[in-house]
Length: 344
Image (cartoon, rainbow, N blue to C red; front, side, top):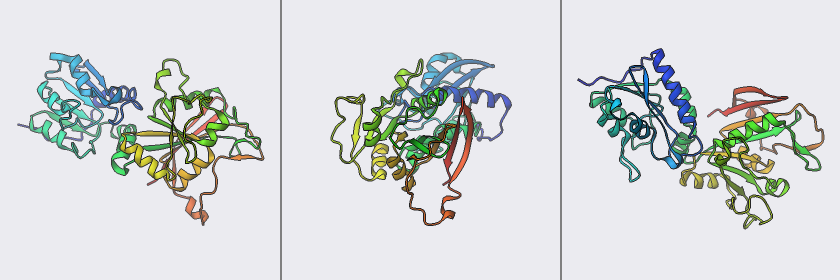
């Protein structure tokens, strides 16, 4: 007789799901259009299979873990960070079918899949097949990890993270334009780690021409994790060949930032990191298109200089309140990082 899903959580389940989430983190920024999912298969307290979504979205985590586990999956428990897909794709089989065929005794799922092609059907099919299903273990962490995927399904666009590195008085550069470096080495290394977790990195034409950035990831072992660079400009036809982004970056000509993000969402992009400059940051904030804000602050005062953000068109001070929630605060060498989430 099939067993209904339960929300009971055991300590062992939390530990194994935490490990599955760590596996999923390996793929964040590389799996578009699919979310990065982690899967562990555990038999009698021993891990017999591990998997995470591979670059480009396939194979899925469950397929990878089951391939490693082989016959040891029979009677075992699978820990999956997202409800297994229930639809057959030209790119691969439904993970629900694979789990049922493998003879698992139990599946523990962190979060439901909001994709209408699955959306509860994976859980239902596992249950009907007689597999015990537990839902909601590590749910908050999983939903946060899958934010880009969920944003694309809900809003038709990627999750947008805006990165700002400023002085204590909110300047991104001296009046002359000099900006390297406001923050120290540890803050810059953290910013490179953020790059490695995004599909696209977006800058404006002003930043391209003033800084000639490489927009790569300069961290040992992560050099191949650089996101696709994109330059937002309505006037630039192509990246000048003398600049470092020539041959790597493309130009986004949309005047409306919402149209640009909708196009990227249609292409399957899940996570966009915006790194400059003030004009682009202002347009995105003014259009309420920023979901996450990384604010690196250096212990320096620049006085007269270039502002991080321009006029947002607020009519009343009250309109500025209640929009952002601080979710993280950390020290990076001499600098501080505050992470904010948009309250929606």
